[in-house]
Image 1 (cartoon, rainbow over the protein chains, first blue to last red):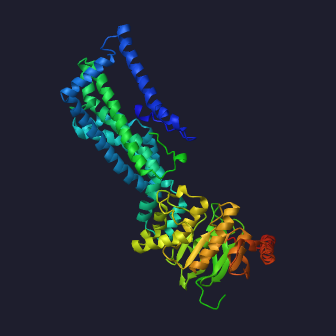
Image 2 (cartoon, one colour):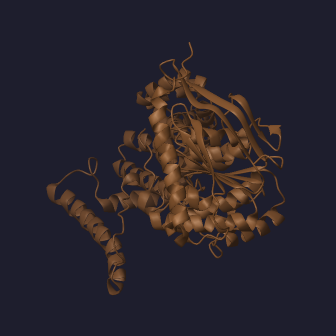
Image 3 (tube, rainbow over the protein chains, first blue to last red):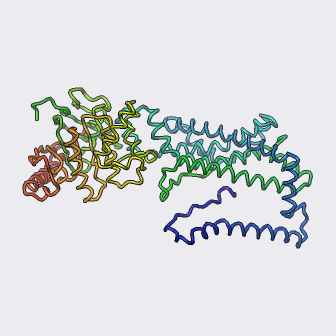
Length: 282
Length: 269
């Protein structure tokens, strides 16, 4: 997915002064040039090979479809619905993941009892439950928020548990010598220590939530970008399908970017040369 | 050292652990010592002799022992307010600035923040880190971080400073300098310091009294008063007196090794 394409290359040496701006420019210019080239190839290639617009519409048609949807207001309305479902599900997953994860990490008994199941559930394609959620909660927002929350919950949960358990014993000993309460230790040591892990989980979870909301809309909905896609597809308005797809891609990038901003803010203390590399698997 | 009431008194202290093989391992056997206010006492011994267990008992981190361990006559029941601890690892919180790390005890113990902040600045000056208040731990060297942890241990003004090989991870040159600094901090603050090390010269340089521990079970095999001048430049390590103390402690350690196999291991059913 586009959302995970960002790479952070370690800076080995200070770049030479005159080439700094050139390098920066290159970082933007080369990918932009590649994009333009690809769009051009797509535009002319489709015409040259005579591929019908119902299979692969040229970019010009896709852009026009996006403009049409934007002008009749449906694009923004549907985006809003999908965004609310995604963020609602994500928020539930975040709170539930931290609370449940903290409980499991604190209690050995609870961990021994449920951790195996959590790992097992991790491997299940939870998205397959979307039809059930629609059956249970109907065609409205609730079912999509539910699907989004369900699949976003697990990456957060697992990372919260791993993060809280990875906390350095020495720091906890230090707190104990001060007779710190369990809550003080959690708030001032355990939770901040777990933050790099939690943020890695959050990064995965936000995109999962978007996926959950869209699949929920595929199954049954009355609004949203996923609903729009299914509708346009059935009406053979293929350029619109591609248009929505592009908007979804953009949405994913923006959500990931927002998480990245928060991460940089919260984790500015992490030395850049040894980033914590917590599990970011689903 | 029995004349004034001791600040730390340990009497016939024994600590056994249940090992995985359901066998009892005696970490500490029959330890007795008393430390007077303002003393700098060092325990020196090989790895695994139980010296860290002794410190952790005094820090209130380890319980369920036989015998008595008391601070100012009060038997230890968990961590004591009169104690500050510095570990081998500085254990600074990497997301907090240096000043906020030093202020951690004030937050945990609900001390007055204004007064504590003033004190934190004084302590950072005492450990030679004035001007580093706003830095993050990873921006400091290992020795500097260790000094921050000493400042933090002193923030709530405990009478006793417990130190578990605080400079063990530092290079030899930095370590010597840190020991020199620590002597100065001790003299300026008037605290009672109980320090654990496996370096004999370090023990001699720092202390007014040294206890030698042997391993398995951890026992005190020798007690030695170090009668060197209060002001100790690093060059004192080259003096004949210093050398004699080192040899004496070395012999006590070697002797204890020779004796240990003959001692019956405490094995309980």
